[in-house]
Image 1 (cartoon, rainbow, N blue to C red):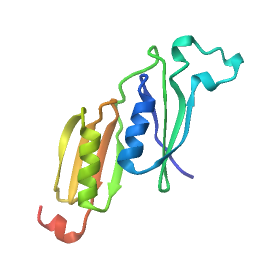
Image 2: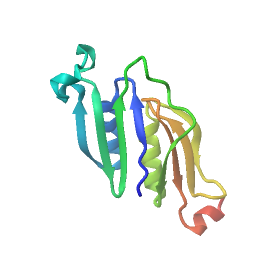
Image 3: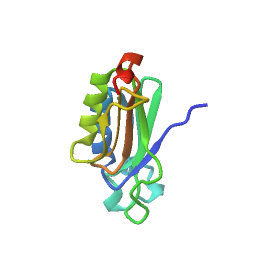
Image 4: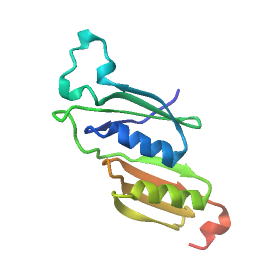
Length: 142
């Protein structure tokens, strides 16, 4: 079994997945627009250029998403997409990239359990946690 986050966006799915691909080093394997649906799907003209389904593969992990209609969209709450990273410098890079034009809830910092840990909401409204356990010597300095 594999559990995959499926993120909903308010018309910004394509831009979000382009950022995630650059930031996380993955590959977008699917980016289907509503316009690609068969004619019987009766897609509204204002939805044609929005994303019906996106799929990003990063190693063994998969992140998926789509644009919901404005009538169905709600700002995500009650969860975070959690990233586990082994390298502190890479954790810093990813956190800073995701934080651009977003909102940092907890700056990336050393904690008693991790060499680096931080929480943010990116510019697309998606909540993230970045956790870098590092080695015992990095955690011991906390």
